[in-house]
Amino acid sequence: MAGHSLFLTPNHPFNKFNPMFNRFEHSVGVYLLLRKFNTSLEERIAGLLHDVSHTAFSHIADFVYGRETKHDFHEKFYKKILIESEIPEILERHGIDVRSVMEVENFGILEREIPDICADRIDYFFRSMINAIITKDWIKRVLMFLRAFNNRLVFTNVNAAREFAEKFMEANERFYCNALQATVYHKIAELIKLAMQKSMITESDLFTTDYEVYRKLKSCKDHEILKMLREIPRIRVVENKSDYDLHVKSKVRYVDPFILQGEELVRLSEISIDYKLKLEDFKRKYSEGFYVKIITL
Image (cartoon, rainbow, N blue to C red; front, side, top):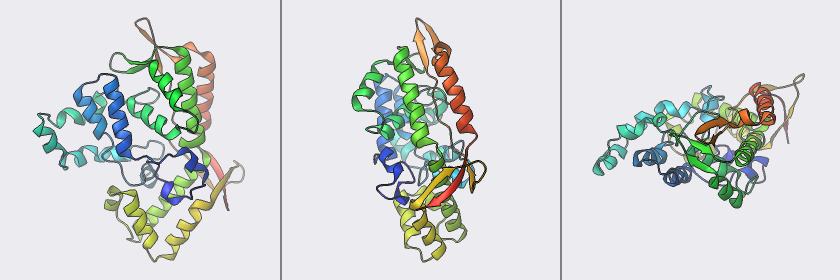
């Protein structure tokens, strides 16, 4: 699911935060969370289908098409891919109209904008960080303090909400959005754009699989592309605003979950001034991007 993995060596710093799971496993995980919180059948089906339009190499396509701070390139194709697949016919055989599961924004347990928590955000966080900064026991404990309320997921305990939010922030700093991540994604995107310009691959190829596209890149005879493939795993970076090769950005991920107090919902940042200040500093720091000097090992 982390689209850079094929381009890196097994001992690369990123791979310690990337258990090998795919979007099918993630989607099943989202479905199981939705079932746990007793959502409608339609929302569970939407959870299984929510990532069907993702391209090869995951969010690297966002860097190819200038959506690196949004990570939403795949969404423009979601309905088209869904409608043109065999899925509508399968659903119809079970008495379900595909239109009832297509509007993901209608399903508030499944998907919500940052800084809310949702099944999608929770599952990819758990999967990508398991045995890196969190454990199975930690996950079980967090789930004990989550419940569905008014079409959204909320915490019932302030300490659990704070712990989750801070671990999520740590995941962003160490994996989802940092100088090395943004640089590696930028360089892989440059490689893909060059391969498309040279007709080694096409945009349609991006809607196949990581392995199919990588195989085409690896087996091509173009010296420039092969050189880039050799260099990408060796990239390391130093941040330096006064002497840099690139200014790169990536999507900044964070949460400010709601906590249920009686029948009222209150955000963590409204309860914890310390977390509010920490979050403001975090957003300011990471939103400006990274000024990096590239070092090739």
